Image 1 (cartoon, rainbow, N blue to C red):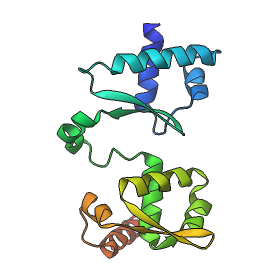
Image 2: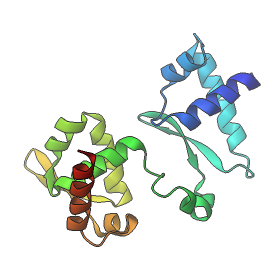
Image 3: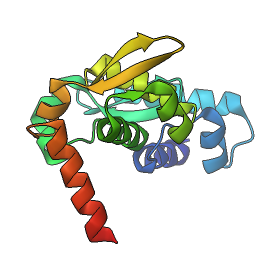
Length: 168
């Protein structure tokens, strides 16, 4: 059991995206989702100890490890911008580069997962969303600029264009 929890922890730590129960079963070579649920519950209870710095979070996309909020301020400087997952960062960068942009364009580029990314980015204050007919217009906020320590959205766009030119 402890070996399975250790593998569960390693998988959650390394995964760029939240893991669904089926993904966990596959990684741990388990045929039973019930056993996965038991492992998840026991691991979650272990992390509830006040001396632990991580928590297991269940989202619509699956399970992921996050730093407990009461420790985040003390350690966030060690890995700036790591509180956003890879998918959210990619979606945010497309929104920022094209802002203001119709949400349907983002969904066309990023797929249906982008709906959840947009929802989270709005909730966290990185973007604002205004209804426009059957779609919505997405735009960055001042919080986005402050968070990434840039002065303007044009500075961000110029920086991205420069990086793309250096790549090619």
